[in-house]
Every structure is written in structure tokens, then in C-alpha cells.
Length: 182
Image (cartoon, rainbow, N blue to C red; front, side):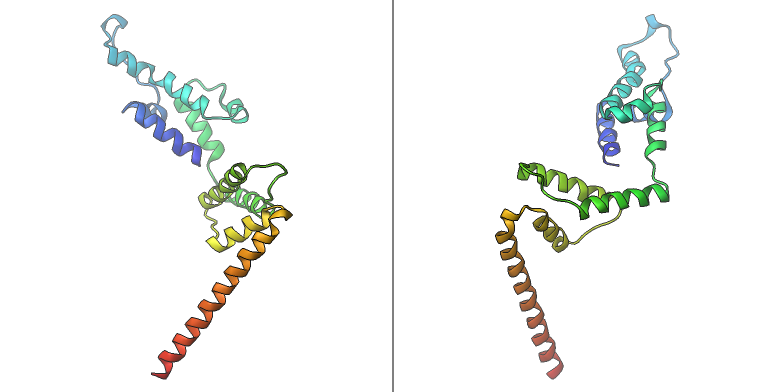
């Protein structure tokens, strides 16, 4: 999942031991408080820092699943269990994302920036799940997702695309014929 990559990168850049805290649990310092160095105190606090970062990376719905966790490791394990893809879960996610792709339309009064961001999110999700579309399919989907006032531009583009495909087909046929004749 995308959020996992973001969180991993963020945690890893904050402290060398941060990822260890998330995957293995809090670092235990076996010293009296008065004997602890600043580095010892920082390491001891890594679990709290990791928990706070994980909290911030989740929406309210996911946060409710981990609210009772007492360490960053416990949060990470629970999130991983919730989000890890078994075959059926992955297939369901592909089905949902494919339906989103198939039904994608520009919303009334939606800006092109928001339209593009929504569409990119669907394409990214599908790509992560292993389903990809070629550029032509994506361009055609975007053009058909636009409102009717874009029809003239869409038709012009499709005409140009079809003309180029016909030229390429004709050119490759001529080249093939020439190669066979020689």
C-alpha cells in the first residue's frame, strides 16, 4: 500500500533505530534514569514518536482499529494484518478499483486538477494491485469521462489518433511487402 511506503520512508529518515522500534518493539534502556544519556532518552522515546507518526498517517476509520494499541509495533502489526492482501481481498480490491475506472466521470464544477488527482489515484491503485492499462486506454477513458462540452475536442483527438494508427498500419504493410519482394 502507498501509505506503508510513505510511513516507512518517514520513520526511517527520522532515526536509524526507528524502523526497529516499529518491527521489533520499544528499545529498553537498562540504566537508572539518572545514568541515561540524551541519546538513551531519545531511543527510549522512539516508540512514542513512531506511534504519533502512525496515528497521523491514518484516517479516522483506520485510527479506530488501532486506538487500543500500546506500542508502535502493535499498531504496525494490526495495520499489516488489516491491510495485507490475501487472494480474495486483492481480487475484491481489483474489482472495486476496476469499477471505479469503468464508471469514472468528471463531476459537475470539478476542476481539471481535482479530476486528474482522482483519476491518478485510481490508476495508481490498480497499478499497485497489478492491473495496468496502456496509454491509449487511459487517454480514451479520460476523454470519455469528460462532460459533453468537451466532445468536439475529444472527437478531434480520436480522429487524429485513428488517422495515425491507419498511417502506421499502411506504412508497416508497405514495408512488409517491400521486404517480402526483395
